[in-house]
Structure formats: C-alpha cells, structure tokens
Length: 281
Image 1 (tube, rainbow, N blue to C red):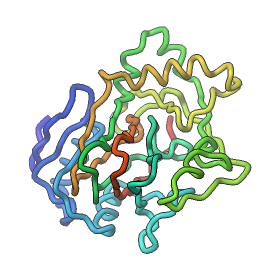
Image 2 (cartoon, helix red, strand yellow; image 1 turned 120 degrees about the vertical axis):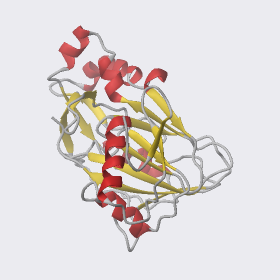
Image 3 (tube, helix red, strand yellow; image 1 turned 180 degrees about the horizontal axis):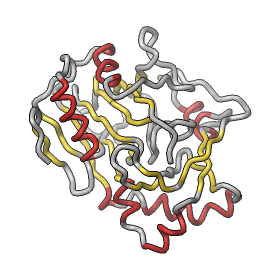
Image 4 (cartoon, rainbow, N blue to C red; image 1 turned 60 degrees about the horizontal axis):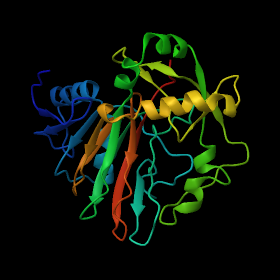
C-alpha cells in the first residue's frame, strides 16, 4: 500500500506496522489522518514512537475515530474519565491485560479499537503480543468455517469483574469496581464481518467468552478451547517492545492481545483510551 504523508514499516507477516513521520499530539490534517486510518485497516495494529501526549491530546486523537468508551468497572482519570491509567507497581505480582483477550467484548457494542500510550516502562520485559483473528479464521478448514458461521457465543465480564472476578481482587494500584451479582451477558457471532473491510474474523476470547448459545459451558469447552489455542498461534502474531512515548493502536474487531508479565520488581505506567464500536454482525 502507498501512503502520502507517513512511512509504514510492517513488523511481521501477519499484522502490525510502525508508523513514522507523524506527531499524534499535533492537529492532524485530513490527508495524514486518512493515511493513518488506512494503515490501521491494512495492518490491524499500528505503532508510533517518541510521542508526547497529554491526556487531552490522547483523547483528541481517539475521537477522530469515534466516541470514547468509559469503562464500566475501571475508573478513569478524575479530569478525563475516558482515559484509563494502567499501572503495575514494582511490588505487585499481577498485571492488567495479562491474558489473551479483545477489549470490551463483554459489552453489547464492543470497542472499535484501543490506543495505549507508554509513560513509564521497565528496563526489560512488558512487551505486548497481538494476534490477527482474520488470519486465524482464514486458516481454518472449509468444514470448520461452515460449522462456525452462524454460531453465537455468550460474552460476559463475570470472570474478570464479577464478585469473585480476577481483576477486581488482584490489582491494588488501579481503581477497579466489582460488578453486581447479575453481570450482563451479550450474544456475539463467533465469526464476525469487519464493518469497514468486509473481512471475516474469529470473535471469541478466553477472558470474556463463556460458552456457545444454547449449549452448556461443559458442552462448549472442547470447541472453545480448540479455538482459543488456534487463534493465538505464532504465525498469526506480532510482538511489540515498548519504549517511553510509544503508542499502540489496535483493532479490537479483528485482534486479540496479551500484555506480558515478565518484569517483576519494576514499575510500568500506561494510559489507554478506547474508541467505541458497533454491534458485531
């Protein structure tokens, strides 16, 4: 693909590209924004280095793509509720996002994308893995595709943010609320069609997908586990090494991600804004 105002360097064969020649804190002209948007669609996750973003500049960039999400369980900044501070202190053992997932798939209208900005990173570790769910779907056999097309899965935040949820109990440095006893559940297609590109992608993840519609969790488990294992294989992934001032913007409609927790004894401070999406179809 050719771009007019930016340089785009792919980071793997499956997905991901680093973008050079743009200051996200500046007012972007329409031509440059269109380049960034196209690179986002082409590569599913895009990376920028050496950015300097205030919370307002961070949010302004996000709003170019749509309205911003206010997380129902994790409190944002006092002056910017749409901006979430993701912090792991040096003494903490558990990180935020430490498992394969797609942000906000537990909502009726899940997120379009997430924009993560690094303020403080450890000297080593703390990379993030990304996996293309387009590639995962396209590699399936015709028989498996035929079976999955039309299937519905149930997504919920119960395991992470319910009364006994993992996130609600294990992250003291972040202001996380427990959901009530009746955590909402939403139905999403197992195979979703990207609303902008028309490409199909698997849309399940181990954090928020509980079972298939009209099936028990026990009945659903073998096929779900196969899909969880399948869709994060090495050939579908890229890996990003963070640096202070780096930004990653990924498409939650076609990407899962995993924040690695391999920097014990060191502090990591990130800030995220999340762009609202639409109901999967």
